[in-house]
Length: 178
Image (cartoon, rainbow, N blue to C red; front, side):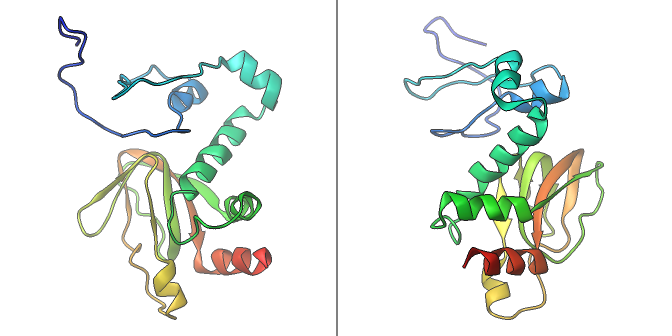
């Protein structure tokens, strides 16, 4: 709702977006009704691009391209790898496996980087990872640990789509970066 002064009232903040972030693409790609309202905290410039314009520029595999771009923008926020070049980040995204999980389904153990494309993940410590969030366990891997603090993840109540790197895939991708 909007009050008389034009301010948004009520509702629950689900996600904070910053410069360069996108919204609405998942509903568009999955042909779902939008379920949230976006409210800017400050003056903002937005670009609205329709599905036909996107397909003309990006081709018919729009879902794959949007997912790849979302994974790339999320990886840029991971501090331990944020210094990598764009080309190197693309190689990491290419090494990631994206997988969908049903509600409450367990995610396999042994992951070193996980990012939530849509839905959410529940962590064994009780915290939740919403869409666009990530966790990494690279420091443990570099210390030679075989265990992962990312073990015990479970898909949220609406299920989830998750991009992940295992220890082997991460090591292989990092070796290929030079």
